[in-house]
Length: 322
Image (cartoon, rainbow, N blue to C red; front, top):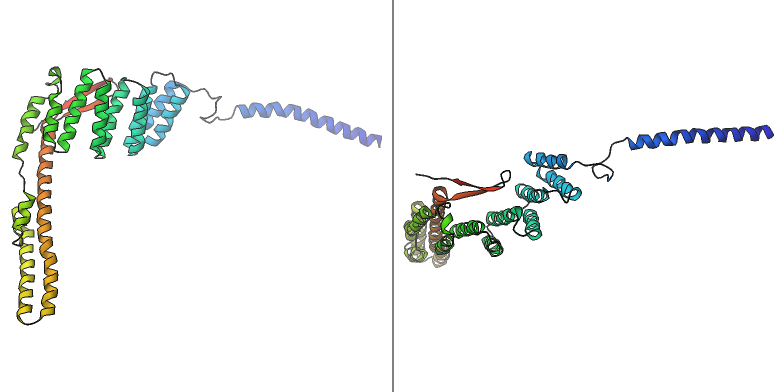
């Protein structure tokens, strides 16, 4: 029994010695293993982190880029590139077609700082998003807010110029002229306002069709379509309505009152559609001609404004058509 107890003690002692040897080794091995980016013990380099986010952005992997810009901001909140990273987050969401998130991201910059470089650019980007979404009223409110807070005449002039073009987009010619006239004398040449004013005055020459007249002329089936220069539709409306009128007349003339009534009912629907279609065609004609005028105005006179993030300035480019 004593020998057995001695063996047991010996085995226990050996086990303890072996464990004391392997535990430090296992800890050392664990410490040498890979660490995730979220591991707080991992030492991050701000330049490498920012460059990695920029590489993802350049590769158009926008949603991954957003996460890396956010990681950069979290770990290096005092870095001078934080505002640029915030701006790039908005750009990433915009290019990734997540417009609501883009607006939220840019608004974080406008709410965070007063009249800094990237907060100003964010105001302009927000207005561009609203214009792309056809939310013109929101774009106007955003730019007018910028005009109210800025003391920089150049920024105000750019905002006036953008507002003028929003009113052109909505064919509000007088409002457009009003805001173009607000631009300071020193910047009038920069925005080519003299040429723009001359082209804008041609809006009175835009061909237009009177919807009421189109409806009135449709008393004769196809007359309204003919007025709106939709000749094929005019011919179809004339033949179809004329055929139904003739069929109804012959039905009544031969004593088929029920059939004549049915044809008359159907014919009335086509006749009313002929009038409604002519009125609609007049509106479509006007929108088409106005749209073509606006497109030509953009092509001939618009100054394209784009943010140059490398040079930290606004680039002006001109496009002309002769």
